[in-house]
Length: 432
Image (tube, rainbow, N blue to C red):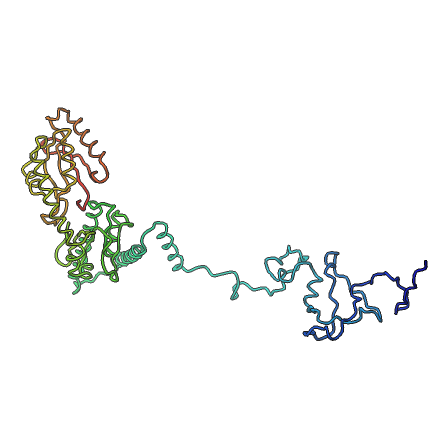
């Protein structure tokens, strides 16, 4: 059987009947009707073989033969720019990565070529080198981190900064020249010094006598003084002029600034009871209680608490296990003793006899309705049948072993003129 003769090729050579085309580009032009609408202008360019980069470099395009279908230009194909073709022949690294300064350094895979971007000189605008921060920026950052770590309220922190600046100005003013003759403002200066002394006295009393778990409202300057004396900053509530009321606190340190801010509402609405007072005149400072239930309900509760205190005092006076001085007996009968003291004395008398020497008034300037929070007890009692050392050991052990609500904040041992010992117990303000 004879195979059919192959048709002659236009270039003069014979091709087998089933011989595939030598190149994929030997595809006839589909014709004008199938050409793309967006036909690029200019001379068509052969797209380089994408696999040439993996074979060790770009290979030149094979020239088209005359009369072949390869000579027909392809319409609608994307024509890369000259810069893109040059970059594709240099290195397999994409042009986007090669333009990055960090990736086109001396050790880049592009054979040591550096970035095509122009180098920015040091000190020029937009360079990476920045000027060192100012001292004001460093100080502000330091204060912000300190406040965050210490968890101090931001208002109190601001007051601390202002007070520190004021103290520095005051210290610098002391080293300045002193006038030879007294100035007209000398009297005002003495008033400022007196007000500062009263504020310091008040801050010391609050830090010693007020329960540190209580929440205290104060103006910013007073809050700084309280914190400097050891009162916890977390329990201080600074009152600024924009604050409408001091609610949320248990006590308020009523300075002249806060009295002027709240006016008559301070005593009539917010804080009806004064438990301590320091100084006189406009510079006086009052420690007032802020009842959570309101003024009307507080006054009703105060009356019932006084009646209950008088009843308990009468019961203690009739107890044979308790011996009292005349002064202590009057305080018990009038109901002026703190309820925590009354409960403690009644429990102690159930075990051993007691000798109550006196009740103390730890609240300066307080009225007669303020309960007494301290008591002096004899450190030994012959009726107990114990030695002085054993009796004192029992008494101190009992006082220190009480629950938090009935545990005295201060228990001290002293001596009287006759040579005996006295155990003084004291509870923190405010009274229950």
